[in-house]
Image 1 (cartoon, helix red, strand yellow):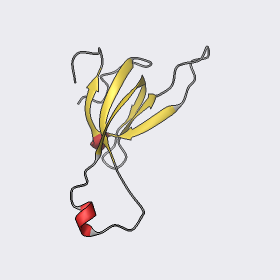
Image 2 (cartoon, rainbow, N blue to C red):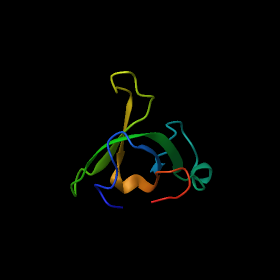
Image 3 (cartoon, one colour):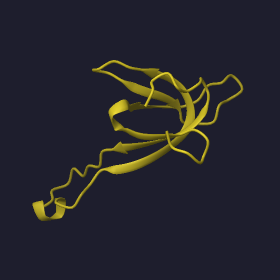
Image 4 (cartoon, rainbow, N blue to C red):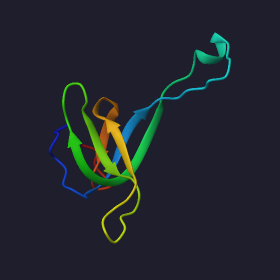
Length: 91
């Protein structure tokens, strides 16, 4: 995945892996088949910050207001599996 591929405020959907946790007491038998959560996060691309230690993609996850502001999601590059830029193909 190229770091500088996307344009500011470009609509994208990021397919990424998130954690799943349960702080309640469980037996090992209850835990053994658990897996990670696959997330599809639509939004608008804002920026990439890439370094070996702290690489991530920042997207605006809520609709833009008249000033271009909104809520955000910071997704670590290591968790991103695909980025959908046009609703059909995956990058």
